[in-house]
Length: 404
Ligand code: LLP
Image 1 (cartoon, rainbow, N blue to C red):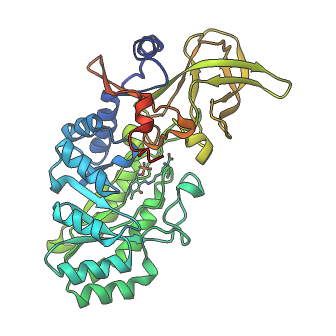
Image 2 (image 1 turned 60 degrees about the horizontal axis):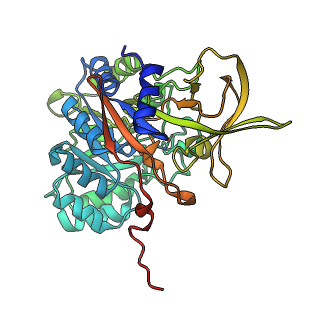
Image 3 (image 1 turned 45 degrees about the vertical axis):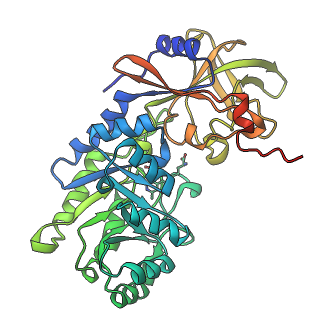
């Protein structure tokens, strides 16, 4: 296993590039991809990195060179993937709730497409008939994932065409003689229980016989990673064994099982990421001892938005006595990263690092409070490289038209 970047390296990077700063450890990303490949080596499985987790073009290129494909959720992610050098055959576009012209644009770029509404399926059928293969994103009506905000397969979720609408799907497929190449589900993020995937497969296998052109089944992403002490990640060896066995029991064309696709996002990049901040202000009160860092939910929103846990370390005082602190940001709004968190004694000017910051960290950042987005650095072969400049004040005015 690749060791996390050391405190010394992180402090040196904080000093060199300033804070707040996102740092990504490239080799950790490759290790995660290789772990998946190894676990699934006996099955015909292909991995598409769900790039919504982190789209810096250097990360995309690194992942392409490592051998993974890419899953995109918007046309701009598709364009970034093309820009990074992925050929269209390695780009999957799984959209949700978008206008048909975006799907047409994706078709024009030649990428693989999953459609998630009857409305767009009909438009696609009318326009392309059998000429362009397409996949169907289904909602399996399974409740899974770390919490309700990151659950996408349940019966109140907006994602996918409900599997109970199969008759209507088949009507369209037959009417337009559509070439349905895959069925897709993505039930949620942080799914620890591998049986959730098996449940999804069972649901899909009940309907695969309706689709004679199927070549693969896409089971989405959602593998859980360890972020809190005591967490268990998805057992990918067990997952591979169970999924492999389920597919082997369900031979398809020429007696061969369908190919298995996955779209891991967090699993690929979460642990590779470190978010470095510096302590601006200490405030002792009767209710709590506050540590205010030079950041906020404008840079890392997961704790506030999903109650997500990010492990925090005081890398400037690792031997200091442990005390409880509320770690907060500098945004004028609800902005707590952690309540009552044990940390080595914190002093103004100390560097605090947030772990598991590679996925949905920078990617979900904003300029709220007219603050500047942080810089991003990649550590590769022991060298650090700046891969995104910190915003400057002019960025705040960049698209504004001063009409009065
Ligand atoms: N495929 C599809 C169609 C998805 O919608 C997603 C994530 C993935 C794959 C990748 O899921 P992952 O392997 O990363 O769990 N921002 C939230 C997570 C939302 C995930 C949305 N869809 C968070 O920070 O926890």
